[in-house]
Image (cartoon, rainbow, N blue to C red):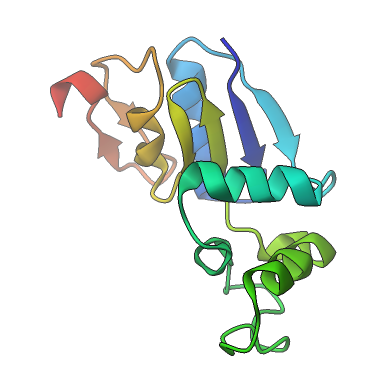
Length: 137
């Protein structure tokens, strides 16, 4: 089964999501998107698969969001995709692709909705928060 995570190892949410995938028994393909950004076609495919608008994928914190005035409604969806490609840090993370769907996994437990082998075992996040397994929710 092919699972892909668009991952930032510096992000706790991304690390927790990766750990949940591994706890399910899967070893995903890891794309460190800050080092290897998606192509325009890949990014647009991910956005369509998540059924969100490009604006909904923009990360604000710790990015040039404000300096680029990306809250301005003058920017088209295509413009926003271009900004994300030019500044990959603007792409919110982690994005996970599985045979059951594609999600922006914020919070990290969102990944349980699309993990085929997510079991009943709880998961403890880095901060100590316990997330019940999918079947015990």
